[in-house]
Length: 168
Image 1 (cartoon, rainbow, N blue to C red):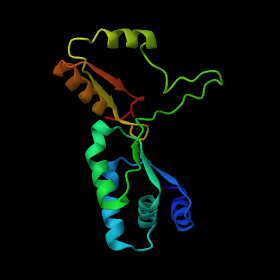
Image 2: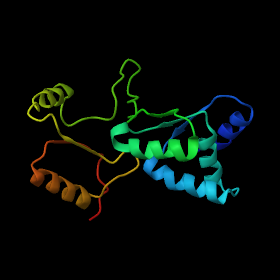
Image 3: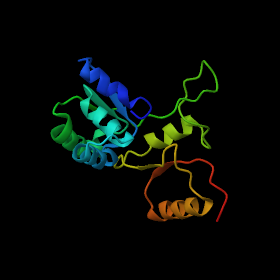
Image 4: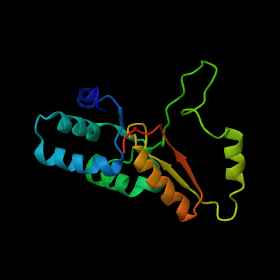
């Protein structure tokens, strides 16, 4: 989507079916699409989003239960087709060894213990997954505030974190 925005427009112009993978979630992308259609200037962001709109299909790194409503709005207002897919959340593949296909980074809790704990959550089968993606790194103070709030809430949760930025 971002690094080769011209590809979608060219492929559409040549009647070549192409898919665009959006690194933005549908809620973030929607206002950009509105602006791109209104302004239609030669700005990079306009070209990127018009290229996505012109694609044969559009893939989002999300899941329907989270962003399905906004995906439907994009389908109805911009794409005029039903070739929109939610395929996420996609996690980075750990590149530590060729034989390993583990996802993500190291865990403080072994995988078998996490799975056993998840299997024990049979009462209402609900928990909260907290993750800020690969681009967000919290400060130590922010992590402590979130951790305290999660613990005080009493809900079951899994929190995917990176090492904090050391500053108060």
